[in-house]
Amino acid sequence: MRAIRRLLLLTVVLAAVPATGAWAAPKVDGVFDLAGVQTNGQLTVGPDNNVWVALEQAVGRVRPDGGAAVLETGDLGNTLGFPTGGITSADGFVWLSQSPGGGKQAIVKIPPGNPSSASGVAVTGIDGGATAMTTGPDGNIWVGLPGKLVKFPPASPAAATTYAIPGLTPKAITSASDGTLWVTDTGSGGQLVNVTVTGEFTPHVVGGQPQFVGAGPGGQVVYGNPNNDPQQIGRLLPGGLPQTIDRPNGSDPFGVAFGADGAYWIAEFAGNRLARLTTDGQLTTLGGLPVVPGQGPRQLTAAPGNTLWVTLDKPGDPALTKIARITGVDPPPAPTQGGTPAAGAVTTAGGATPTDTAAPSITAVSFSKRAFASGTKTVSLRFTLSEPATVKLVLSRRVAGRRRGTSCVKPTRTLRRAKRCTRLVRVRTISATGKAGANAVQIDARRLTAGSYGAALTATDAAGNRARALTRTFTVSGKPRRR
Image 1: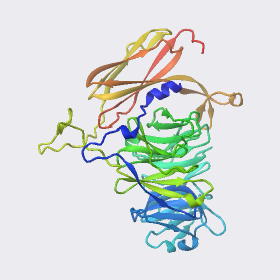
Image 2: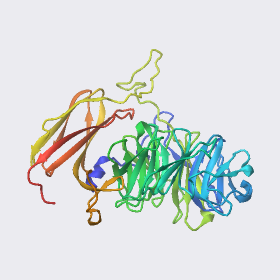
Image 3: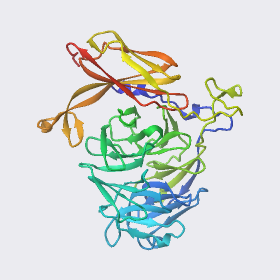
């Protein structure tokens, strides 16, 4: 299975990507002090276009030129206690989560232009500090707490709504491009939970303990999973299976952000580098951060000017708390050949090349055989594409499971009386280059054991537009092979 995962995504070195035209590869362009406090949480771009950082007993404010100020309790009207990591921007304010108690509220509202007038905000249902906090696609602020999500309108925090999600242990939350939210759940066997703005939720088991999550186009998200074995970066499509890439032991993939270059960036703390993952699954890495034993990138955010800002933590040594600026996170120019648009590009009468935002369509999907005996050599999946695209086929076996909360998990002795269910176990991923028109992917079926299977087919064009996955089923009969 590990070898199969490694075939799913191509790992290359960012330095090997050539610059084209005026576009240059991203680079570390400045490291600035947040000395005297320990970083403890996330970053957000405030209404003032400064980057705001949740710290221990303080908040950091960093200007685009790198000028940093640390705002402590006295700077914030004595409303600040112990920030727990959540921070977001909404309605002209910066909002911070903290541990309540001692007269301190769980939510702090900070006016960027006058931080000393910050105030604690009482929100019904928020009875503890949170690491999971974001501004949702509906404009509300969403906070994740054990067993529940709470949303409240920034203009009226008292009008909060609580949605129960039994067993939820939230670490992070983000808004997706399809108008939903995703929450990483470090309990329940490790899962991502997709939540609508009306509180309906769907869990997706990914294993390990997923930490932070970032959203990209088409409703897809990427997450870091450092507590899985092996450590992984995962990419999840709505309603689809997780597609993962193994990272070297000690990488510690953690914070995630989606950059102006149209790719995900992941902070790999112990590896002291950033990983860059494109929307079609190609991974590159960026070094150049300071080499300090025990220090590494932990959280990051995309900021104006096509930049990224990354916190550099050294646990137990606040004097070495820093923040790094990454510049050159620019959208690359449209590909050209000899100064003319590349083959297949669409041009207007004025010669401009418009952005391709249309996903390829997949039609006429069918198997040459939907039922066959174990040991059959080859089976074909036939389909038609509207344009050239890279196609991926994920084969999953349907196996017995038991309900644990809202999840379908592997049966265990303790769950022997739980409700039966069917879970999907990924067994193979096949990648191929598809052409416009009729195509076929050949499946070597000799190593498939008897059982029922699902096959999820996706297609991504040269502009990164991805078609919605189409799933077909097939059955393998005969005596299962021994493992």
